[in-house]
Every structure is written in C-alpha cells, then in structure tokens.
Length: 58
Image (tube, rainbow, N blue to C red; front, side, top):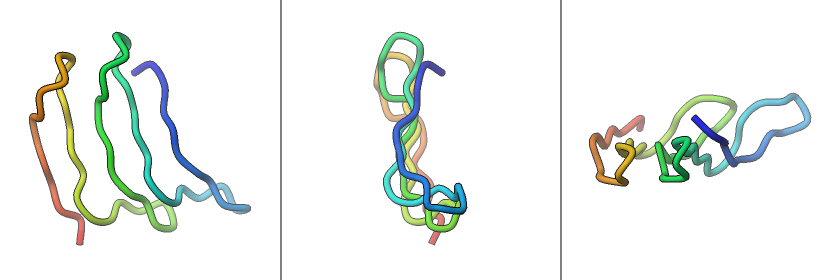
C-alpha cells in the first residue's frame, strides 16, 4: 500500500470515504467508515485497477 485518504474525528476514529492505493498509484480499495467500522459497499481492486471484490457492510 502506498497511501490512504480519509477523515478522522477528534477521537481518531475513521469517518467518511476512505481510499487506499497500491504502490503503483492504482486504487486498492474504497468505502465508507462510521466510528471506525466499515459501512455500505466496499470495493477492492487489483494493481491494474480491475474490480476484484465488492462487499456490503450494511
């Protein structure tokens, strides 16, 4: 993993949209957090940017 983007609240809990990237800059995964728990649909991509998995976290 190269980097991640997303937000933290005052208690350092993850909130909102988060994205992580492969070392080559391609998107690795993306989804939403609420109180540091995954919510909604998360998508995982390979290093070529091809969708590999989509999972619903409610």
